[in-house]
Length: 242
Image 1 (cartoon, rainbow, N blue to C red):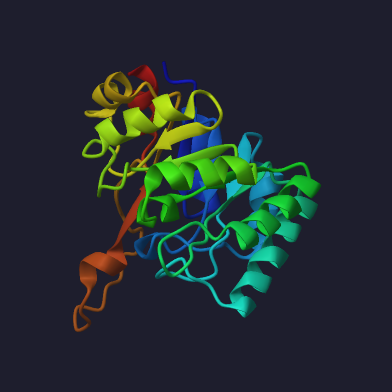
Image 2 (image 1 turned 90 degrees about the vertical axis):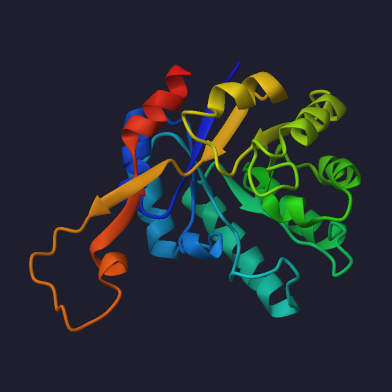
């Protein structure tokens, strides 16, 4: 049975839409086409002021892989401290070694900073890039994370449903396995049935036409500039009904 729905949003406006539609947690990021990066301090602070549901900013200084430099690591630590000082409920992290194993030492430091502020920690889909999902899960449990966001190592959660089910069974309540990627109102019911999940993650977006009336037709990329992908409250409500 679904106990909590987390919606990934890339703006405060979309987060408020998700909250109004019934989401219980927001994963807050920017640059979704890159897989998400950390929002600005102002965005996090104002999101916290306006949201009364759980707020988990993504701690990811750039797009690309999850192998970070020492300087990027310092940025991540600073971002987590800011989230704690701002009153966020948790953060979303994930660091790997070059061989595809979990970077236990540096992830441990990030988790310790979060816990110092009383925040929870989700390990994001860097998990799906690890070389052994089940060993990675055990290491993440030891780090003190409360959940793992995963598609089971596949492009979408429905493709990885069997692996997710095995992860849920192997976790045995020690950590929450939260499926995400490609989740829709049409496949959510099957995903719940196949995996035994208790929490679910998605963006649940639809295209929205820009309010701009003037358009310079001499420029390209008309669709990209004048159509926005925005959180769709009807999709969230449909998921919750499922």
